[in-house]
Amino acid sequence: MGKMKEIYTLEQEVARDAEITLLERIDESIKQRQKKGIWRLWAKALGEKASECDIESDKVAVIRTIVVGVNFVTCLFIIAGIIRHW
Image 1: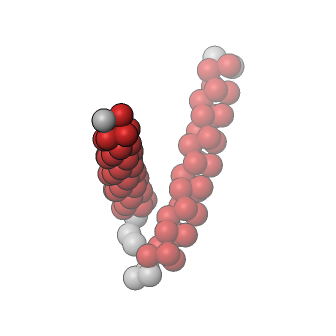
Image 2: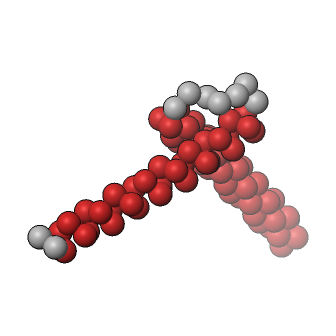
């Protein structure tokens, strides 16, 4: 009887581990889809798709993001300078 209980407990642990692994995979898949969705929206907000090739379009979107970031930081410095000398 003791051996059967050990086997049953082992089967429960394996089933629980498989369930956790499945849940982790589902959670990871959802996060990846959300990231792709957010990136897609950001790339569209930056402007027209640069190319039919997704890899090339992503590279262009990264360059556009850097340009927007530099512009944003420059504006912050200008605003800080105006406030300082007010």
